[in-house]
Length: 304
Image (tube, rainbow, N blue to C red):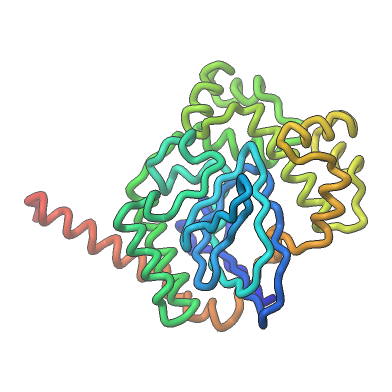
C-alpha cells in the first residue's frame, strides 16, 4: 500500500490536520478498518473504487467524493481492491468553518461534496479527479477549502473550548472551562450543542475513547486498562461501558480484529519531495485567487 501525508498550507492549519491518501498495489483485496465514533470529520476523494459498507443486508457504495462524520455508531468499511483516494482530515470542531449545514444534519452522515457545496462541490470533485498529478489535485483542493474558509464564520469560544477538551480530555472539567471563558456552564452547553449537536460531556467522552483506541492501535504492546486510565476513565468497567454505548461491543474483541487490519490513525506527517516541491506555490496561488476575488467584488459594488 502506498501512503502519503502532508501538512496543509498555513491558512488551513488551524482547521485541517492533514491531507493524506492511500493507493493499493496490484489487485490484492485489502481489509479496511471500522470507522469509530470520533471528534473530527474526514472528506474523501476517490479516484479508484469508493468505499462501501453492508447496511441492512445490502451493499451501500459511497459517493466518489464524500464527507464522513461519525459520532454515535461505527461504520464498518467493506474489504475491497483497487483503492485510491485523497483525504482531508478536519480538526475537531472545525468542520463548520467550511460548510453551512447545521451540526445535527452532519452527524453519522456520509454526505457527497455536491450536498455540501452544491455546484461548487461538483466542480471541485471534477477538478480533483481530472488533475494531471497528485500535487495538482492537492493544490485545487486546498485552494477550494481556503476559499470556503474566508466566507464562513463560527463560534470561536466553542472552538477554543473544543481544543481545550480535546487536548486535556483526561481531566477536563466543564464547569472550570465555562468559568475560564467567562460564561455559565449552561451557556457553554447551549452554544456547544448549537455548533456541534453534542454536549461538552459527550465530546469529552468521544475524545477519551478516540485517544485510547489510537494508543492501542499505534502501540501493539499497550494494554487496554493502562490506556483507559491514562485517558480519563476511572477503571476498566467505566471504559467498557462507554465503549459499549457506541455499539462497539467488547473492547477486547474489537481490538483483536482492529489490530489485524490497517488503520487510519496517525501515520507520521512527511512531505514527499515530489509533492511538496510542487505544492510550494499553492499558498501563494490561493492568496492570488482570493485577492482577485475581493477586487472583483469591490468593482461590482461600485468601489474604486
